[in-house]
Amino acid sequence: AQSVTQLGSHVSVSEGALVLLRCNYSSSVPPYLFWYVQYPNQGLQLLLKYTSAATLVKGINGFEAEFKKSETSFHLTKPSAHMSDAAEYFCAVSDPNTGNQFYFGTGTSLTVIP
Amino acid sequence: EPEVTQTPSHQVTQMGQEVILRCVPISNHLYFYWYRQILGQKVEFLVSFYNNEISEKSEIFDDQFSVERPDGSNFTLKIRSTKLEDSAMYFCARGRGGASGELFFGEGSRLTVL
Image (tube, rainbow over all chains, first blue to last red; front, side, top):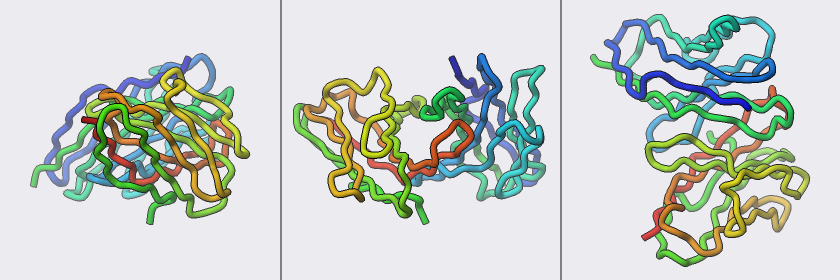
């Protein structure tokens, strides 16, 4: 069965500092992994996805994530936080057998301190 | 611009009442999904819908829930007799199908059951 675990329900960083949001996955087969962002009162927006091509995936708004099979991780990073990055971030893994179900983590709320 | 439009944005209802949540995709895709997010919890899969039929559903999606696409455009989620624990944000999503295909979410419908 597929699942993801997001370590840290709340992360605070200073504006301009590195953003690191952690996600570890569990999958019996090579996974497809996703990061979504949810701004207040909005839906889930895709940041980036890993689908077994390059292990370093670049997304929108300067975010990137690296797939590390040995660590079963897919951590999200951004070199320099901006105030507009404050949001809820969700890691997700899809079911490779059916593709119908996405399994989401519990989310990490990012606060950016000016 | 959201990929799908959901209505209502917020609905308050009494326990035992029927609720219909609506979703209108911007583009003409065949795969649709409903997810829900209880406050402070994970985003959970409810059901997937392909070619006007349910293709997969979770254990959450019991007999109180139903989905349909009555006019080939709107995609609805009906809860026949709401319970307090149905209070959640409900997200509609569209997709292309397949494990590597991302989902595009609407802004959600917040349901409050009193």
